Image (tube, rainbow, N blue to C red; front, side):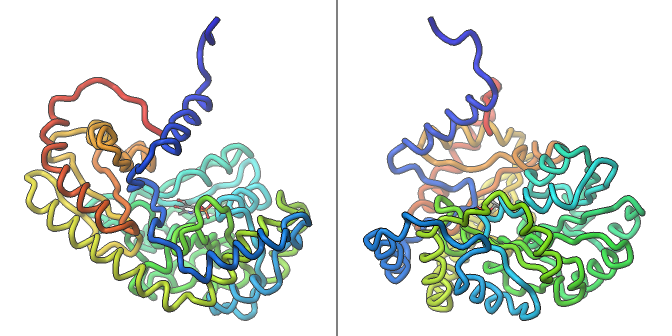
Length: 382
Ligand SMILES: Cc1ncc(COP(=O)(O)O)c(C=O)c1O
C-alpha cells in the first residue's frame, strides 16, 4: 500500500535527492561554487582520509590552526573563532542562544530566510525592512534601520553582500549600522558568507566589536557546500557563551577542516581565478538579459557569486522559468525562496560555475521566457 500522503519535509527532501542524483545537473541555483578545486586542497583532504584521521573527534571549537587562519583572514585580531558545521549551524546556534520570546529580530526583505525560521521557533518576532525596488536602491539605508529600532530589538541580521540581491554595504553604511546596533545594545549578526566575492567589503566588527558576531562560510568562496564547514567570530566573552552548549561540541568534520586550512593557504591564487570566472559569467548573463524584452538585472555588478534577473515585466512567473530550465538539467532559483513579498518578480542565477554552464543557460533563456508565457500550472519548488 502506498503512503496516504506525503509530509512537506519528505517532498522537499525528495526534490533535492532527485537533483543530487541527476547526472550533469547545472547547479545554477544555490550560489554554490563548481569551479574545479585547487589541487592543494584536494591533497589535504585525501591525506586526512588516507591517514585515517577521522576516527577521532576534532577539537570542540575547531582545529587551532584553522581558528587562527580564520581570524587572520578576517583581520579581526581581538576576536575569537568558533568553527561550525557550515555558516547555517553557526546562525542556528546564535539565534537560539541570543533570541527568546518577545525579542525582536530585525532583518531586510529580501534576506536569507533560514535565520528567521530559527528565531520564530523560539518565539521571537521578525521585523523585515523592505529593500527590493528602485526606490530603495536594493540596499539598506541606515536611516530606515534607525526608524524601526526599539528597546525590544535583540538582534539585527545583516546579510552583506545581500543574498539574493548582490548589493553590498559601503564603509559609511556599515559604520552607521554598527552605531545604530550599539545604541540599541543589540547583537549585530554580520553574515559575510559572500564577502570574498565583493569588490570591497567592510566588517561591522571593526566598529562595534562588543556585540557584532561575524558569520563566515567555506561553502561559497572555496566550494565546500557539501563538506559543511563555517566559522563564527566575536569577542571571547560572546564566544564563551556560544561555546557553552554548541550542537557540534564534538567538533566539526575533520576532513573539511583540513581542506579549509589548505584553502586558506592558497586563497589569493585560488580567489583570483574564481573571481575572474565569476565576473565574466556575470557579464555574459547581463548581455543576454539585455537582449530579451521585459528582463533586467536590477543590481549590477553583483558583489556575490549570483545575479538577480527580474522577469516580472516580461509577464512570466519565476516558477515557470525555473521549471522549463530544469527540463534542460539547469537549476536556477525562484525569488519566492527568499521573499514572499517580492518573490514573484525574479529568478536568481549562480555565477561561480564553469563558463559552459552559463553559456548553456544563456542560450536557453530566450526560448525559456517565451515558453514560460504559456505555462499556468502550479509547480512546487523549494
Ligand atoms: C547568507 C547566507 N548565509 C549562510 C548560508 C549557509 O552557508 P553554509 O553553507 O556555510 O552553511 C547561506 C547559503 O546559501 C547564505 O546564503
